[in-house]
Amino acid sequence: MTSTTSRAEPFVHPALFYRGDREYVEGTARFVSDGVAAGEPVAVAVPPSRLELIKAELGSRAADVRWIDMTRAGRNPGRIIPAVLRAFADAHPVGHVRIIGEPIWDGRTATEYPACVQHEALINEAFRGRDVTILCPYDARALSHDVIADAHATHPVVIDGGRQTVSEAYDPERVLAHYNETLRHPPGAATVRFDAALLPAARDAAMCAARERGMSGARLQDLNLVVAELTTNSVVHGGGSGTLRVWAESEQIVCEVRDEGCLTDPLAGRRPARPEQIGGRGLLLVHFLSDLVRVHTGASGTTVRSYLSRM
Image (cartoon, rainbow, N blue to C red; front, side, top):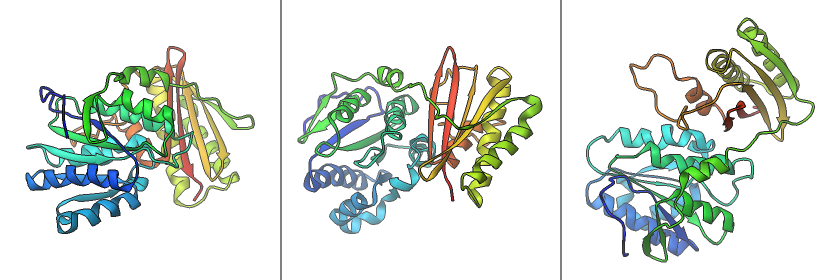
């Protein structure tokens, strides 16, 4: 493998384009083996079928690797940075850390994809200055041309056919702006306006609307927490009031809060909370509870949308 990159910036974030299982295993297993041989902490967070391919290639060396099912841990792309990548890297603060993360695979829905590519763009800022390499595999045969183009824009380095080069298309800020899409709600959503005095009523209305649409059990309590955090954030940070909407979409209940605030920190809700931190955990909790979170923010206001399975 040839390289044209410099180690001046300790954080390295390559996209690995593969075509078929053989290329996948060659690109990932070598990355893992080199880390294990060097005594470096290594984690692999990919879909289950891919986990098995890499494990089989590694044999006994697999015991030295942290294995993570990305379809579960990264179902909501917004929690991958705090719950997967930072959780592993922060547990190994000394020396170089290697992680394979595959958040985009064939089967991700059109609703999920914008959150996936925003996640990939934000990794660069989240790990700037860290002695970490995060390798992101992309199935170049199954994924669309647009997805591959986005991978070039979100990764400063690309590996294709065993050759590593600098991505001339690297521009994560453009990607973040492009996928900061206006989120349009469907007609017929249960809608409630709220302010500080109406926070309890808004939570009650959301619970009622979710029950009517088939949500039950522990997920109702999760929705209650999501609504509480989002509406409180609107009152405290978003102009003092907002609009709450709840509707059903396929097998999920969708809860949306819109207010007049603007999110100026693109990593809000994606940084792990410090043990001594007081407050500032609202969006982080929303990401951990939700199956998907979509966000649109700008001068006209902010919309945060949470998707939760009905049961």
